[in-house]
Length: 276
Image (cartoon, rainbow, N blue to C red; front, top):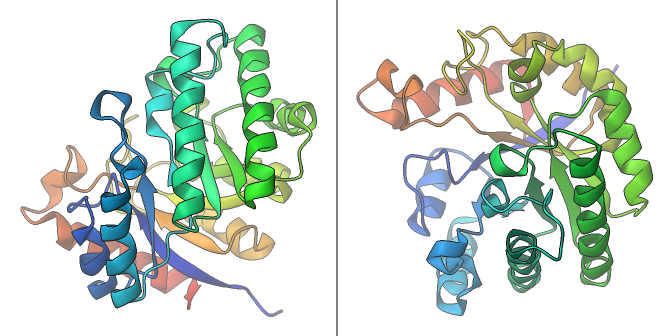
């Protein structure tokens, strides 16, 4: 059986050097892509500024880096769970719309909408409000050629229900190798087998003792190697995106230089997957 090949990227918010210069550093470390963070409402969304966009794009062209996706991280503070008539709901949608404009300007094909912290889906009302906002986003994103990806910890049943409720072809799921285990000690490999047709990209991270991003890939408790096997078997994504938070505790305690920890994760990924 011919196993698929993958492209390797890293999430900007976990990389020890955020900002445009991260493009150069990531390329020098052997990455092909960088998932960008649109920024926060309180900081006026840095990636909405043309000069900032140009800095990223110029360095990406010079060093051969792709931007496979961009997250609207402020949704973890101003959740899609809030009604559109509320202040937080309006801030959430406005940030997404501005993020879509930035993604279109920068030729970023996937926009990621996280549902954690303030935006976590805890009940049916949260679910319906989130789906309604995603529908609006998909409608706006469709003529832009942008795919909308939800990152959440819903059950397989509710993941399928979200896909059906949203009902847009440009809607997908951003999968994570640790989040589901952290939520309810879920068998992440078995879970991926159930939802893989809906997955567009994959975040790779691991941890132990119930801590987010606490260990090098495969040395934690989330069953990373089993999940990696399912990723290979299903070929559910083109992009594998490292998302350990390398300059934050507890994983930062492994080495005084966080880039050395990044290199360890790269080595693990290249041992498991064929990277192009």
